[in-house]
Image (cartoon, rainbow, N blue to C red; front, side, top):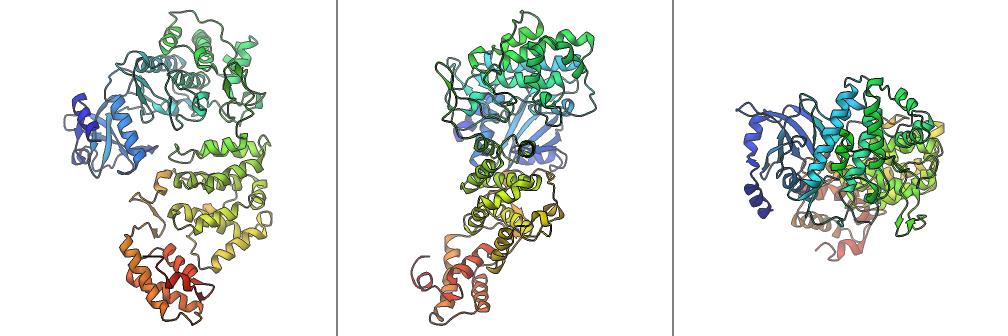
Length: 587
């Protein structure tokens, strides 16, 4: 990190202090938005420059540090009219932030997907061309090639004149210009925009961005999301519907559905053909971004595109179905892949997500209710994710489970049949489980265990709930939403907040606290001394509480998990466990 900061001094982005940014943002009061890895605030410097200050969540998380370095080392080195400008950064002990030029009109997705379409097609065409120019600069004109890996409407910002600027370089990578392909660990990109090869163990290249731009182009033409289950089945996945219309020469239908006027028809047809070329399955079939720019501007003729979706079965889309594996001779059958439901569960709970993807979660519910995927297999996939030790994945899996159970009638019984509750109890009992995940599991069990709805009653839920209560497990309070039969996504809570190491993590009235090894040892020694006097005496339940109280007198505000470890572990079934209190297991 020291070398990185020294390099940045030479590259000339300004290094701000936390105090300077507090003054500029009026103590971070003007929130523009939040998500991903942080929150964005509007700020004004004394020279009249208005900025957007992106404050990263946490200061010690390794992934936060990686994102910080990725953004500064990429966008901090380059300048282009269609790339958001990075003025500087702050790297203080208490604050890590990125300072960008302020973009008055926010992100493109606000204008594409709302009912009130205030942008005309001519302006949308200009936005498409400008975005393509920005990506082409990253790929072909920089001193080092930059691959963005997350091109989507939310990452295209618009200034006061609605000029587009590519933003959010948290997933970007710098590569030597001589490298045409690179190997990469970990997944990148956003489901629905990410190229098929990003989800497979294959070399990655700048053609990943070309694919994402093609998906973006479809949404610009249609002024709708590419995947929309509220539409007739044939139109639900827009790119494939567009191809079908193009292949059969029914472009007029396309123009009518997309509300494109006659004077914009030529530009729209051009954008459609470019989009179809950009999303070709094989990377080598996709054009360079510099060629994309020329196609859009009419400098080169656009040949008739090939079918980019020939590898898909009828009715499926790469947005929700794992792509088939590539092999050297053609398109393989994909027989060695994990099953489809497992893949869907993995994508919806990917560790690269910083918050639940509500749209994907609810799309999965629609697929279950329409019997397009096997709900039992999906529940099994979610169960596998809950069993993993990653706090982030556990949290996302529990949220997905909650969404599915509350929106899919059959899932309620299938969760019981697949013994998912057993894994949730193990998670609750595991002392290493972070508080937010533990409380989420408890809330789900409590909501189902207390249900008075005959359609949502199964003995196993009630038995699990009562068993936990009989052991003295404390359940967190629940709001009315926890009892709602149909789930509505709450305000986004980043999954990073469920990691115990983050100082700001608080879940209701149970604080996250860190205790040293010495404090913990002292607490258990206090309990041991109390219990050692009663080795041969049976302890009634009220005495077990005294043991816990003794520990609390040694260490202030010991969390409930420590109390339960003593009451349920040291005092097992009301009888002192000689092996635990008599040996040196805690020394």
